[in-house]
Length: 289
Picture 1 (cartoon, one colour):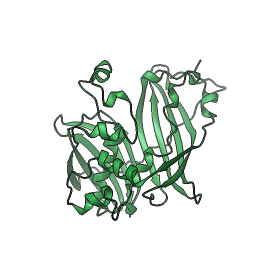
Picture 2 (cartoon, one colour):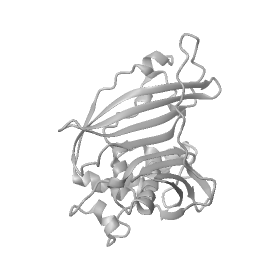
Picture 3 (tube, helix red, strand yellow):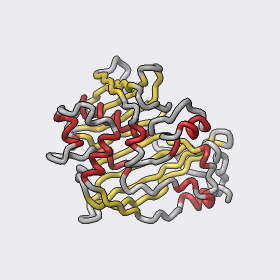
């Protein structure tokens, strides 16, 4: 099928209902490395059912519609799709267990040109199925490297909203290093993306990597860990937004260095792999109280 702006922009997503338990909440936290300090109260609050709290950015794995871009009817060259950015806005704290419904829609499709690809922004509202309250709004920005050049005067495509940038032109106000664990991708894939790229060495080599890579959203979650620790006193209710732009993959076992700046409650941050001195997350943006 040919790529069609109209067909994708008006795609009808079925609501995704999901029941999750405290065990799922704990597994998500373990998949981000919490529990590596098993007697630390800041870790235990996310991995122990006595006084359990949910990490706010767990919202990104709930009510997910799946990798719909792989369907032939979309006309999307899915092999060339990259996860470009992840955005999250929290409306209220996540329950540690419950029933949620994800309502997805296509927010925008931007034509960058035949040689530059296209950008698709998928918006998902996560709602408490029991009381109808909105819990979070999630945006996933996908870079379609093989689908640019579709726009015409009759079908011009959309424009991309400006990306907020809070990274200041000075030395970071705070620097934190968090070591990822060698088995982190194997744990994280149990609560989110089970793509073999994150587990099977042969699949990873076929994709051009030395070994399985860490999920981008796992790196995103580790960055969230640093923001909670540095600027929220490890209180998950104080984080209200968390956005990142993905720039390079991370290998499980590498150390992430999170550099952050506080501009009156708006946190800008970048993330580097210390072993390779390469930036893996850029334009990080968080809102705290």
